[in-house]
Image (spheres, rainbow, N blue to C red):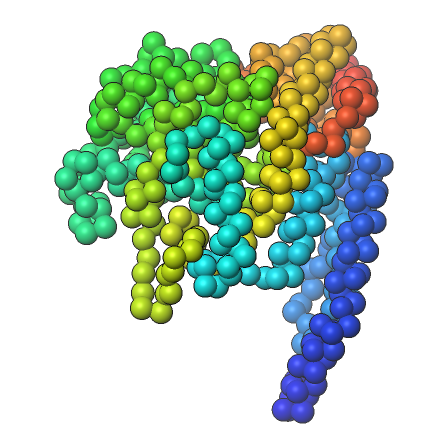
Length: 472
């Protein structure tokens, strides 16, 4: 753009594009086509689709590009290079599916483009966050008055929960972190299982607790913290427990562990990225007995609940501890009587995640959430039973939605996973379990049907046959 007339033409074009709405209509039409094709498409893109992505690798254009052209390019080249996570045969990384109501709410909220920092910025975002908080505390049976903060994911939620815990423990020891900082502060310690998720250690490192302050408790055969090796806890302790081991899906024994921690004056955080939802299902609620005794909890709505990405949830018993840990104030900020969401998260400017979370919870209701969790568990058990029938080894007790699978030898397992991922019929990830390579199945989509499992088991068998031939 070389002069003011040309610049004025750009703004006129943008106004026309918004008034015409072609980009939005194209996006909705292409999105509908994408959803319609999910059941039949490859679960992972083929080499041609991946190679086509090179078309995006271009210099930044000198001149503006029409909105419709951009949306069309994304559809033509981008859609084939996506993973079919919203279908019924994607079992990688505990990535959830997508509820129709939650998707629609997300699209509408994106058009609204609300900043959910303050009530005055978006009353609707604030109201829906407040409603979701009440619903979640009730649904998960947490202490009355517990607060919820909506963040990008469990990584951030865990960080916030441990931050609140760190500051609360130090405050009880007479040290005000906000006023005095960390230099010279009383020493704290973190106690966690050898099977704790890597994001827990990352959060601790960010908070200033390095390897020297972390005490790792051995895990049992299923990945649960082994209580017989639990060190004495005290008022300097952050205890981190798991609702759903990242590999096996196993749950720690919360009631006695949380009871010990409360008596000792420790702070307990429960990492429940996908497993905390077990609390909302009649057939799995026993796995979470005692979680109400903890101090903070982290969970993802974009996993088991099947809301869109990214929607993590931090829950904390002590509202004042969380607000104090995340405090930010200035004269231009207008706090009010309504919910000011920035008080409960690290971010100020943030999208209105509460809209799709509210839609997901409302669309299912209490009974629907119960059935969703139960169905995921049924499909996981079906996977395990049918794979065993085809002489695969299932290495974990299938208590929730995770299945760990191995072949006769480590080499065959590794090669089978490679063939399975290349095949496109279904997609699973790999991991290590007790020093052995495994195929990790995470059943996390409402769309996974019994037939999807049968098709996927057949893909496992075919992949093993090809792998065995390649190793012969």
